[in-house]
Every structure is written in C-alpha cells, then in structure tokens.
Amino acid sequence: MTAVVVAETLVLALLVLLVGGLLRSHAEILRRLDELQPAGTAQAAPVRASSAAHDVSGVTLAGDAVHLGLTRPGSATLLAFLTSGCSTCQTFWEAFADPRSRLPDGVGLVVVTKDPSHESSARLGELAPPGVRVVMSSAAWSDYEVPASPYFVHIDAAGELAGEGTAQRFDQVRSLLADAVADVAEADRRGSRERALRAERELAAAGIGPGHPSLYPSGGGSNGAG
Image (cartoon, rainbow, N blue to C red):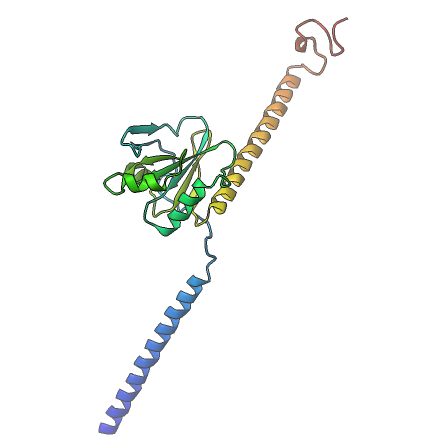
C-alpha cells in the first residue's frame, strides 16, 4: 500500500512539473510573438462609445484661455495628443520641429497635452517647436477617450472626425493623413459628377436639352447670337 501511495505521489509531482513547464513555454511563445509585431506600426483606434468630433478648450503654455471650434466647417486639423515624458512622444516633438516633416496641404497641427496640474508648462515650452500650437486640455483627452500617448485624431474640413489611432513614427501619421485627404478629394469628385448627371437628368425630364433657348439668356442658341 505504501508503495502505491509513493508511486501516485511521484506521478502527481511529475504532472505538476509538466504543467508548469507547459505554462512557462506558452508564456514564452506569447512574449516572442509580441516581439515579432512590426515596430512602429500605426494602429487604428478601438471602437468607442462616441465617434463625434469635439471642440477643444484649454489654456496655452502662457496660461491664456483658448477654444478651438473644430466642429465647425473650416480647415482640417490633426490633433496630436502628446506628453512631455514618454520616449515615443519625444520623436514627434522632434519631427514637428523638423521643417522637412510636413503635413499634407490643408491640414493644420495642434498638439494637445494635459492640464498644467499634470504637465509642466516650462518643460513643454522647451519641447514645443516655434509655430506649433499647443493646448493644455485634460478635457480633450477625456472627450476623445485617448487611451495613451502618442495618439492622433484627424478632424476633416467639414468638422467631422475622419480618423484616429496610434503611431510611433511621423511618416506613418503623414501617410495615413495623405490617404484620408485623397479619399475626401475623390469623394468630392464623385459627388460633383453625380450632381452634374442628376441635373442633366432633371433637365431632360423637363424637356430641356442641349441648345434649348432657356440655357441662353441672351436669346442666342447653341451657336451663339446671330
């Protein structure tokens, strides 16, 4: 009987060691798979409760109140949510200071940090390049549900949220913005063509075609006045 108990104990101990080894091996595999993810890959934002754009209210580095009406039609804006501490954010502060690092035409840049209670205005003043607008607004981080920094939000010229996500290099952000701007331009072209075709169909339905007198207020036809 004693021999059976000893044998069962040894088997149980071996099973425990085997399971422990499998768990460690599984954890190591997961760690290595995570390391194989491409460094600096831009990632789209997770689905969140609201996809609406928000105005940004806060203070400048000088402590002056500021309000950005981003939800009104105007020019497109890239909101860059950065901090003064993260190492990846540092690469973007440097990129924004480089004149070769340009956003697509028609897209303005606003860097959004947290309130002065979380960030040092003096330190941000050292990081912020001349000409780059910086707004300190923890409320904006909450409105856009920013999960971590760096984080980027693209507001299009119609005042709507066109895209958001994370990135580790400026060229990724610029590429994504360029694609978004091109998509908007193509949509505008398609819309213009569709409006022109719709107008032609409506005129044709009313009996108005090429050369119709109503198309020439001066009284001339399609070949001009005689």
